[in-house]
Picture 1 (cartoon, one colour):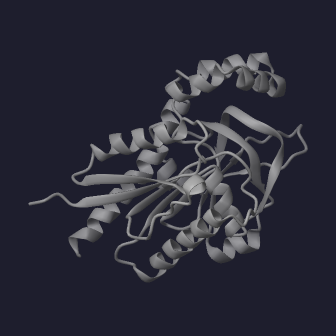
Picture 2: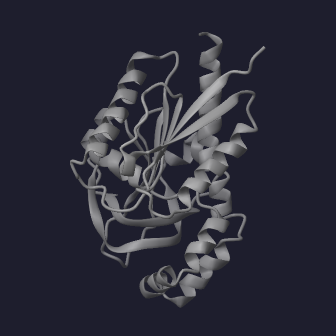
Length: 278
C-alpha cells in the first residue's frame, strides 16, 4: 500500500536577501518528515522577488520572515499573497473535513496582522536583533504549540517593525488569540509588541523566529554590523550573554525544537486523519 502524501508549500519572503531562515525551515521539515508515516513533499515559492505564489492545493503552508517594510506596498506579489491567505481562510470555513494549516513567521506575521486589522503595524524606535525572553499570555500557557516551552521562553528576534495597540473589540469578535508578548519593561515607556497569535485553529503566527538555530545565529552574531548594533542598543555585557545563550539547551535550542515541530506534528496528524476518510 502506498504511503499517504502530505504536501507543504514554503513561501520564501526574503526577496533573495541572504538569510538563515529558509535553511532553518527546510531543516525542520526534513527532521519532522522522518517522524510521520507519510511522504512529506515540499515546494518553495519565491513570493516577493518572482511573484511566485502557490494555489490552495497544498495541505500546509509555511510563510517565512523577510526584510523590509510590512506596510502597504500595492505591489503585485502582495495582492497575490493576500488573495492566497483569504482563499485558504475561506476554504477552511467550508471544509470541516480537511483544512489547510498555515504558519506565519515575522514579516509574514506582520502582514497578516495588518491584513486582519488586529493592531497597529509600525516601525520600531530602534531595530530589535538578538535573543530575548518571550512571555506567554494566559491563553498561551495552554496552547499546544507552546506546550514544550517554559514561561518565559527565549527566542530569536530580528525586526524593524512591530505590532502594537491590539484592537481588542475586533480580536474578541473574530476569535483571535494572543499567545505571547514582549518582555515587560516598566522603566521603558513603550508598548509591548504582540509576539504570537493564533488566528484560528489552523492559522498560527509568531513575530519571533522559531526556526532559528545556533548554527545560523552564530553567523549573524559574528557579523560586525550585527555585533555593533547589539552593543549600541543593549550594551557589551548583553551581547556576550546572548552569545552564551546560543549553546544553552533551554534557550533557542529548545524553542527551535519545540514550536514549529509541534505545529507540524499537529498538522500532519490532522491531514492524515482527514485522508483516511477521503
